[in-house]
Amino acid sequence: MVIRSHLNRLCAILAMVPVVLLTAVVGLGLSAIPASAAAIDSSWTLTTSTTNVQKTSSVEVNCTWAVPDDAVSGDTFSLTLPAQLDWRGALTFSLMDPTGTEPVATAVVAPDGRTVEFTLTAYVNGRNNVNGTCRFFTQWTEATTATETKTVYFDAGGVQVPLEVGVVPTCTVNCYIDHTIATKHGWDAGNGQVRWVIATPAPRDLGVDQGGNVVTIHDKATAANGFTFNCEEVIVRRGTTVGGGSGFLQSPYNQTTWRNSTGNFPAGSYCTPTELHLEVTNIAADQMVEVWVLGAPIAGYAGEFFTNEASVQINALEAEVDDARVRNQNASGDGSGDAGSGGGGDSNNGDAGSAGAGSGNTTTTTSTTVPETTTTTTSTTVPETTTTADGLTAPTTAPTGVRGASDAPVDYLGNATRRGGTSVLAFTGSSNTPLAVAAVMLIIGSALVVVARRKVEMEPTS
Image (cartoon, rainbow, N blue to C red; front, top):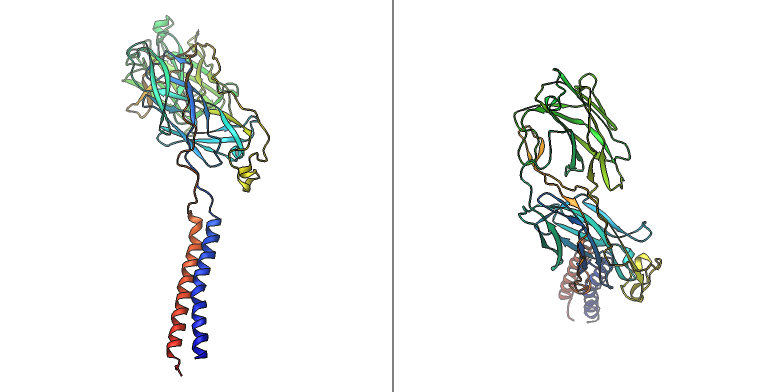
């Protein structure tokens, strides 16, 4: 009986082992799992200084933003574009603190170009009244038929935020290039490059035809211009027919592509990252010329425009040609917050937790008023494009959009509250290991109990 009593006690102890181990291991696993980030509400004001908008026009959007006081690092908020606008320019950017050294939030544009998601950084922990400004570029995609103010709506986490845009009728015929004079044109090619086109009139139209005409083009790309030449795709077209919505040369035309890698630049012509010199020979009296070349923006270039200052000479005549400019469609923004008693901090990064002020410097709140903008006359049109038979992307329509006086600000403040409640614990991939260990220990413990009980049953009762 004494032996059976001891064995029963051993069985009871062994039965507790897997329970204790499971509790300990799961507890350790959960303690290592961070709180899940929450999708939070945000408040927005959106305005634009772009006027005379028509299909393919570039529209600059200026914004102010704010998040709730209980927002913490890892929380996200988003802004989705309306159907009338497509995203242009940078696909990632940061909202920087007042010193310009620490991001308050990072922004990533979704692959479809419709939604921008902002993720808050540790800067916000222990701070109240976190807010800031931003600027980004879009392209108007809808055909317009009248001069009017159109209101489009962005989606900020389910809240509709209006933007008023002044539109004009969309140009449809010869909107971009005038081949009766020498011109330069440029636009954002949409693949991290700038497209430049230099177009000339026919020698006969200028009264300089002398047979075997020569068009000479010289272009430079300095640091001040903001780009370097792509010498692997210098396209020269010569033809007699223009038309379509854009005014570019229409098929049939003669096209040659010159590349440094193949060494097929003709004598007297060359291309380097900073200089392009072309001598296009044997131009017929009625032939017009177009030179298509790509430019890669210089890393870190912060200028407002990429500029092209190419010179054009037809035989001995120096053609008058204005400089071309392409808006640098970079996205940017800022943010700040006050040290306060809200906005629970994170003990892992030195903030004071729910007590309030973290270890960061105290900052003042930025104004959420959209500043008054000045009037310019810069064309910001990006042409609608199609792919030609030779694979070159060419504009089919290219109306002229002019940046002008700002519209009255449109204010809309959503409810700045956390959506979905307080962050909760969530299992991540890192939690699988402790749970697996616990399961194994539970199986081993159960097996020991079974063995012990059978041992007891086999012992004599006397």
